[in-house]
Image (cartoon, rainbow, N blue to C red; front, side, top):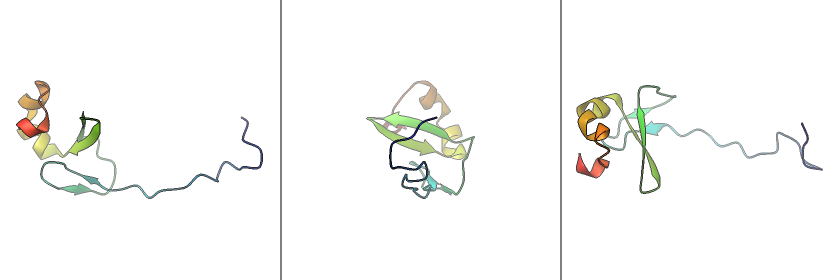
Length: 69
């Protein structure tokens, strides 16, 4: 592995991970939630909680944007 001259591998800016927030109901999750879904709509990544995902499963499978739910 090589690195840039004069730089160290630890020189990158560390950012705090932001908690996930459901784009529909506002529920927050502190850590990774494998049961949440992620949707990219108009170039924006949105996350949806378990409950909102289940309530709108047919619309999600039909690839409708969340604005139609």
